Image 1 (tube, rainbow, N blue to C red):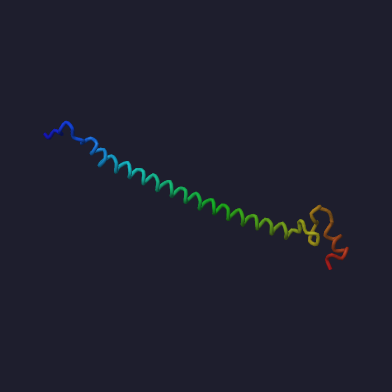
Image 2: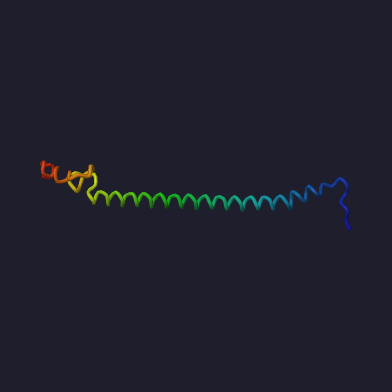
Amino acid sequence: MWDAPPNSPWLLQSLIFIVGPALLGMYVVARRRLLQSLVERAERAERVQRLLAEQARIDERARLAAGADHPRLGRGHRGGGGGLMAYEAGIGR
């Protein structure tokens, strides 16, 4: 059996050449997972934002089609019979 000389840095060498690469590999894997999860999160947030914007456009188009806030189409923004009054006043001609 071989015995290391008393002043030999074998423990330090084993830490550097065995434990060091293992720790570095664990760090690289963890960093890749983190970056991938951040990319997925950003993509998901962008998709949600696009869906919300599209839903807002659809809602606005439906609101305008129903005549809300438009004096010539429907009830107007006050809820009364403003559409007919505006038309009779000559605005709709």
